[in-house]
Length: 267
Image (tube, rainbow, N blue to C red; front, side, top):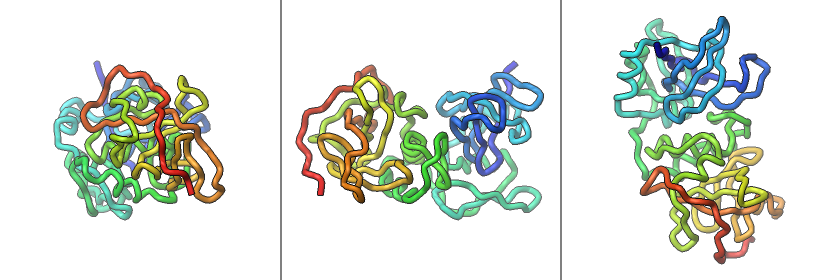
């Protein structure tokens, strides 16, 4: 019989192996639901309903729910916190901070009330939402403004804006469709790596010459036909592989290629 869970904390750490000192692979935010794949005495292996990403969570941090509640949350229209100071008040009148991207439409099932700005999924505010994360520190496996990695950043910003993509940069690079600089839209993703076959970094294009991405922190840098040029050091930090657009499809079988185009020189 399938078992289900929900994140009722601000953030639920998900680790590679069942131990508190083990590698953080991702995080779940308030209101996000998941499947229980395997339950042990202290830890459970879980699979995020949204992106099927798997890892281990501490049972003390999991709220187990029944199938009826799980299906109710799954079928509701998704409403997300877009407020850096948003919070929920539970049935005991206790407050819990809700990171940007928290699924506050789950509040009813948790008998809680959300206070703060919220948004139904829309494709019109990608750059606006992305800029709310500026100066957030980089954290491997992170998905919140107090610590976030490059693919967690692109995924959560897209999620709030109604576009579903996978968790890791390499997976995201196999979705959407290849686009060129001529057809580039604000909000398209750019991918980087040492070779065309291995994607190691992703960022969100603001325009044809600027990118917002996680490198030390969420920052805005210049892009040229070679890759990302750090706005402070003027040095190339990431080698460009290509661009992808997700406006018209969520997945397609398209290989990454080097795109030959001319961008304005970095200054």
